[in-house]
Image (tube, rainbow, N blue to C red; front, side):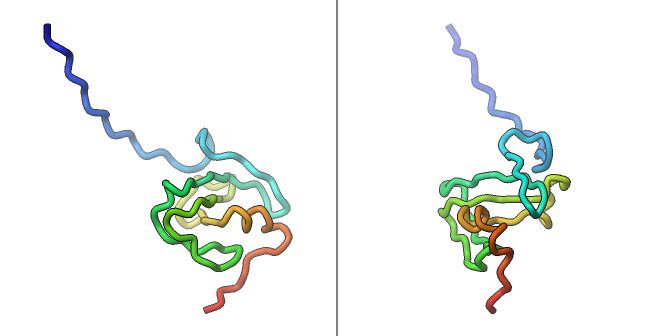
Length: 99
């Protein structure tokens, strides 16, 4: 008896990061409505600069990505934040670059 071959998965069309995506949650604050996605340490593979503290978010460090809810999540609008910086953004706003 022959065993059926498993077909390799077909590549999916890339999905926009904006509305309608199940893995982003909506948060409202004094600075507007945001779509926020948690990034685990295993998913974090690049270095980013947090706009809250102006420090680097290194590969392997869990953090959040946020973009305005009215946007579709274009690269220009997304920002990577440390979780604590994102949580305290209403109390202290973005930090000016130190260098």
